[in-house]
Image 1 (cartoon, rainbow, N blue to C red):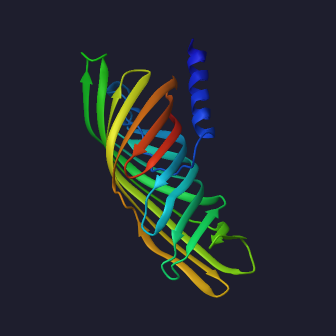
Image 2 (cartoon, rainbow, N blue to C red; image 1 turned 120 degrees about the horizontal axis):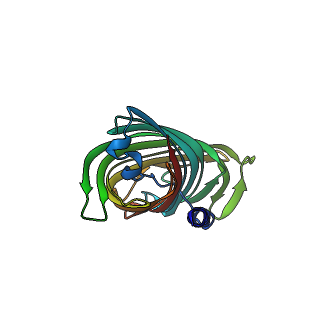
Image 3 (cartoon, one colour; image 1 turned 90 degrees about the horizontal axis):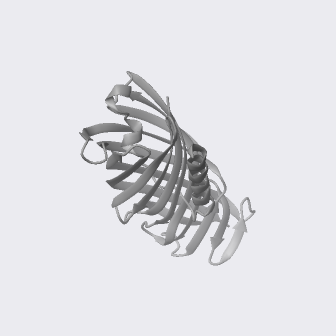
Length: 265
């Protein structure tokens, strides 16, 4: 029975990863998996996590279609006395975007190959309460702040319906910077093997693109998010001791889904 549960969780995660539409959400995580019960508290704890983040609908200024971003990476965190965790990570990112250039009023689309991306953040425990009369569960609330950044090179650029592979003799310059951050309050319910969680967040991103083709500059100035407030919902499932898998979805500020597998030791 134990192995059947393990197989079901692994197959569910694989399904979500292989049917993704495009992903780079600011993954938040489940506080009940970061902060263990009081009897298991250590002065320092370490958690390792593999994350796949997928944004398939992120609105920004000057954009025609929603930005699509994929991020696959790893995160290492250090917890202190069960009240805060500092974490950092790195991985690869791909991006796709269509926008109207502010300099030439021209439709420009670009897609990237995989590039290096990094992230850093902190999670603080705000509240904890034992709910013995509700399935002997445990309620936890946390505050999370996270920042991500990357510099990306284009793989293809389309200007007025003409596609150019990069590098190309007509494309003399391309630069793109993308930065994403959020603050979130999340509440999770530790019910043993299953731990649902919900939260609200304020997020923003900054994207700047510059393309030079045959001496003409096509530029998108610092674009920011159209919607800053969002909600998230997720579920964590224990696989074996100290190892869990999670699925998280975000709405309003971005439509996205995130999958992760974590190990706390």
